[in-house]
Length: 485
Image 1 (cartoon, rainbow, N blue to C red):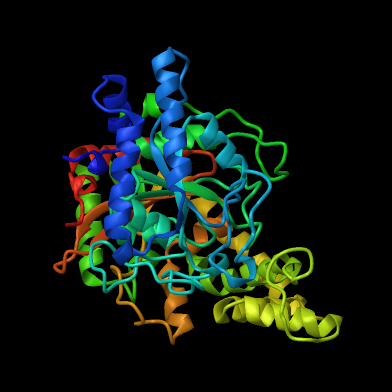
Image 2: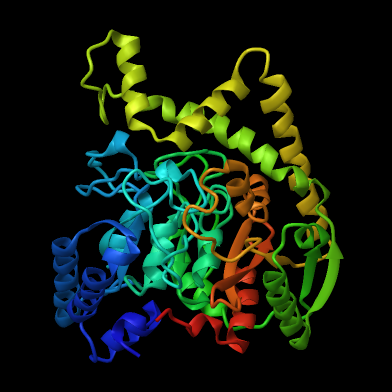
């Protein structure tokens, strides 16, 4: 297996044994990017010089005997929604085309403290609004398993970068499934931590009560390692929870005895592809072989999750994106106009169609005479969705089902049908609305050799046990070892 097909944990071991340097590892990944990303289009920009300098600094630190960080010398790709000091951060939008943040997001600062090597920023759906990475203002990322297909979204660039071995690990964000859905479609591991577990400081907001940052990796072990690094309280983020971060990697291989798996009937209804369902059922049988008990549970209000999400999320987007007016920073129109006209033209030129659609939906939902009928009612149903999960978790330790209703679809297949696109996240959205944790792990392939993901959902701040449960399946199977040709 080549350097670029190794996991982060394996790359750390190679460096510790003196079998590879960070410079060699980083060089191998940069070579892969140069050779393959012309096809995959995962990266918005590659910081080759910065990555080489970071790698050289790690090698010098190792040679001097200084204490190294937990991710020392390992390359990582970053979704272009996270602020990186001195490195352009665009949210894949024309309105932020030349924005260079003067500070690092908290997760970036923690990665740098862990001696990680940042290789570049990855493509995404503009402002994280989409399920296919086709809404980027610059390019469409391709799925490494079939380049005629999409990698999922909105974190498609980060997922494709790991799947295509352009980086061993990456960071994405998840507002309604934007980590778990692309992880499923690209055959890798992706986690959406509990809301408040990971600081959102320095993440350019889409929907503030739903957004959460998490890692993409080849396996659960790497995911646990990244979670240890990026999790924890941050005084810069008022929604960050002040509670200890478990040593996820220390307990990862401890089986969960007496495991009760909740299987919601709502996750196995109309719209679920038969090949996806077969793979999920087979994964559940594997858990039964290991002594787990399957428990029927119901999430009756999950049928309203998509409707609730596209009111709450768009309302928050309407508010959050109001700051991008072309005045202090970002795109400003060159057309002559008065103040209001300058705002309108700058935003009209800078925002893509999907972003404009969601701003208008959200503004309407918050407008006088409609706020009670739409936004406030959606918040009440959101509470009912959370109550459903609370009730279900009284009967089980974890909920399992498909991450996405289908495998990766073809580029352009759903572009003209927003509702069909929105339904790509039908199984992931309720997790964000409830603020709980979720993870997608590889569990098979279709006859067309397209990856399928198994989704695990756990109670708030129960990531430690959720990762152990995910590892139980991974240890008994080899789906996570597969790499696209």
